[in-house]
Image (tube, rainbow, N blue to C red; front, top):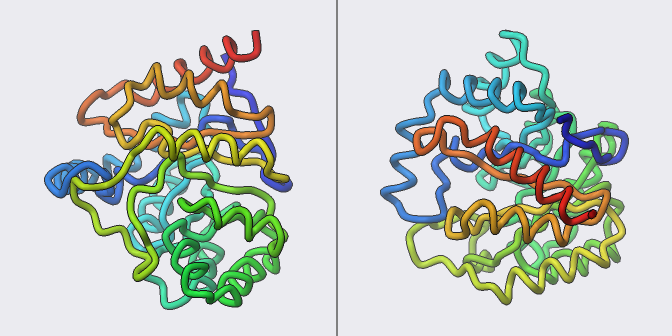
Length: 268
């Protein structure tokens, strides 16, 4: 069965989008799990996983805008890969606009501002930096979006930014008020009430939403997680999920099948 498509601006993407957090060792579980993911996902395995997603019918991946991922994508495309890259600005970039420019320079088909950066800039009142980054993306003619963990991110964006899509995290694991960077560790918050508040928020957004962290970083069984997401995805929404193929080599295909079945049941 072919994956249905949605539109981010003029870009058509599948409703399942491959996420890249495991590639960079962001497990949101523990530092030991982070290290295990980094050790597993060398360049060759990342490229192999991208091809697995392509074979499963996925046409887009959300990956960090850094030198390592740009190198993996270059190799993937040189070897015949066809998936489109939705660039996530790197939190370590000097400015959000610089992070966006890196994605624009290295082949992104769409770009969004990292959720931790959005949380941080809004908490610090530095909204002009966020507006400049979005304008950089739009000026290049690419679909532009933001990610975020805090509800306030999206309320503000609806009023002040001209966006093509949102990346809405189901949870607010830790505060980014003082730093945009993910700290890691095993004390992050994954609360059901946060998830419920965010799926309620999504229903009122004016643009498509990409639902992410739907599995609560592995804490929620996949059948349950995809079933819940499908029940709250609007027709123009998509879902992003990362995979750790060391745990299960066929994880991408299984996740795609679970989402398709859940979407079918939700629309029945």
